[in-house]
Image (cartoon, rainbow, N blue to C red; front, side, top):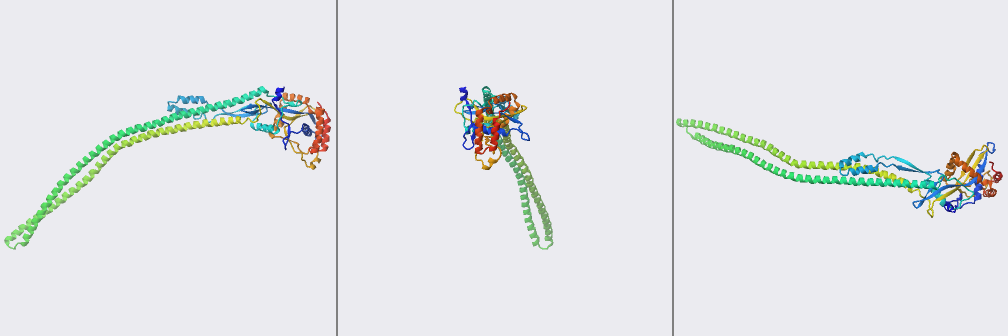
Length: 543
């Protein structure tokens, strides 16, 4: 028993809102009694329909267990639970095996990436609920309450301890379940990180292979280009030599023919020059002849000769013009024959040099193909990697939920049972129907009540204000609902409550009666209402 008490933590029920000191027990009992009497159901004409069956100081057990050098809180009643969103990771081991199998086969590796394109895209998520484990918001409130109010380690022997629906063994199962959930998440994250690492390594390997292939292509085509360039340059040089020879032969042929016709023209012009000279001589002879019969005959002969010479000169001029026309035709023929020859050789040279361009084009196509393959491979791998990293982020968020759970700190590392005090009131009518009202841990308001409010019938204002809405939810909502639907628990609580009923103790009644006078002095209760409360206090609750 002594060992159990050392592991029990009991904060006060009510503390001052101003200095955070616990108030006296008689004042809190009196205040709860006043509220309980006020909340009894009555008929329309004010006749009582139910009475307070019992009022007890009770404890709600919250297990505190060391976790990562701090403490998690576990609801011994099992009214709360911790919901953890967990990602169901895809078959990562199968994926990694496929990666290894495709190590030396890039086509297989790419097909594997395509196959697993949607493996990690939309992983299923499930909610892992750990019953009893208190989530951070409520745990933070309880921690603040303990740090704010302080605590003792000796429970009251006259208080009702709610039955522990989760004993220490079940509490350890919750801790084990939480540890297992965290371990599973860490294992999943490790496997995914290993999968990502393996994917990165395989991607780097295949990308490096593609880089090596591109380098090999460049080297091979460089070698081919050098060999081709040597052959092409030799062929081009031969073509140019052949072209020069052929052009030279064509020009030589035209030059010979031109020279032949030029020589004929020179001969004709030389002949024409002699004929013109003879013509001039005959003209002078005719002009200088005497008009005698004998000379007249010579003149006629000379005139005839002159006429023949003139005709001959005309024929020669025609021949010269004909030869000049032939020469012009030769020039035209040469001008027509040389360009096609030039073009033919130019095309031949271009066809040879095109081999170099074709080699370069083939190289560029091969390199482009490898780079496109590398780009496609990178996109597929990056997509898978992003999907896996997204799942890792989800797992980290789940782990963060767990890491944020521990809040409260204690000096030692032994499990604690935090007994949160509250008051439980049972109302019972004549038909035996019962209802319960729980008063959660509270802050005590300052008793600075205006004088006029003392004349208002009943309680002028609420002396006790719930410490927090979350603590109020435990007692006023969840616990009451549990008692309403759990007949076994309700029966056990009712039995213990009747036995530990504060209103059956003369000492407690005397304390409450004196405390009511104090509440009147502080202005919380009107004098008229106090008299009624004291009278009802004297009535023993019926069974």
